[in-house]
Amino acid sequence: MTTLGWYLVAAVGEIAGCFAFWNWARLDRSPWWIAPGLLCLALFALALTRVDAAFAGRAFAAYGGVYIAASVAWMWTVEGQQPDRWDTLGSAIALGGAALVIWGPRGG
Image 1 (cartoon, rainbow, N blue to C red):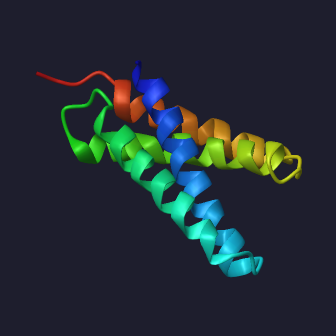
Image 2 (cartoon, helix red, strand yellow; image 1 turned 120 degrees about the vertical axis):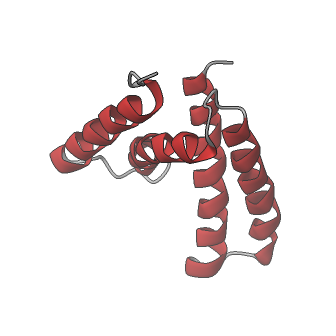
């Protein structure tokens, strides 16, 4: 799988895991939401280890931009709240930054 593919798997795992806890803690849903939340968060962590980067910090930093864009997409597709122009612009800027961090040219 490609770097972008692993980042997408990580984003879905992290956002779904956090959303499960959100449902339990903020929306008074059953504590059973915690179990799938933990599994999703484990998937997130595992997926980040698969990113093709020489250093963990670089992989994690670039993931931040993907997380921002994926969170806005989650808000739209799962929560039904359409992003505004600032959500869209911020996501684009974050993805640009992520691309620079992970794929930017490195000196010798």
